[in-house]
Image (tube, rainbow, N blue to C red; front, side):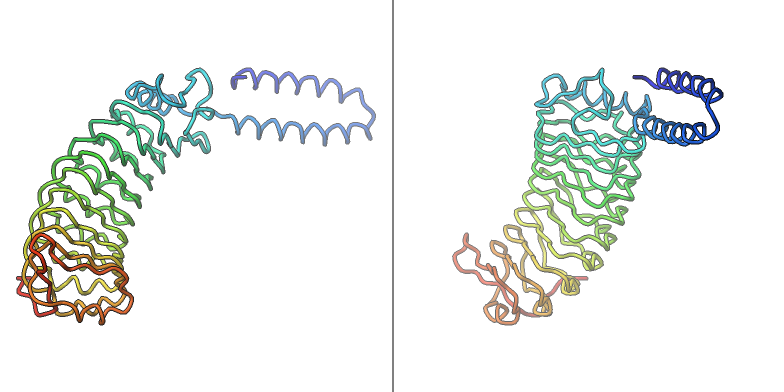
Length: 336
């Protein structure tokens, strides 16, 4: 039933009610009026519950359907039914606030129209076959908390506009083929908790703005082609618990400032081109549980560090390619 028809039925009921009540005795009128008021209230609540999503939002959802071959989704949409009934779409107060289409055989690209879903809080497109990239119109989603397009076929560089998602807490784009550099605007995501970009084809350097992410707990950018030195500003991300950089092209010595990450539990930097001596305050990272630094060019001996880190459960510092090169716990020679 559409809204116009519903309104007509309420008006018809209202006219009938008035004619009927006028013929009733006073005691009966009181009972009827109370019952009628309750009925009208329930009708009004029902009307609100089945309100309509805006045309703009519905068209944006249709654009996603059309651009990702919706007819072949595992669970498709009947576009003739209310949006509230569409698989994976969460509607609250006539606004589309959630889109969860994980494992649903989406093939194609994310259209610019996704930026018209301005009330979205959560996007989950995990494990599909989406290509292309994240459109610049994503910047319109000011309420977005989670963006998960991991395990797809994205290739385009990340847009600078991604830094405008001020509410974003979780950004998961791992297991794609994303090229280009991590945009410096990433540092504007002041509420970010997790940044998962591992297993892509990212190049360039890790931007120094990464240190502005003071709420960041997990930075996972392993298995890319990121190069350059680890920026000393990493120490400003005080909340970091997991820092995973393995299988990249980082080089140089580790900055002394890394030792101020007192919450760090996992430091995984294996398979890079780091060299020299480790910072002499590494033993201050007493919350470390995992320390993997092998297959770099660290020098010296580091056996005693294991005894200085009481919570360490996984420790690897051997360069298997050179058979026994061991890292050291000494004053480092970086230039920060």
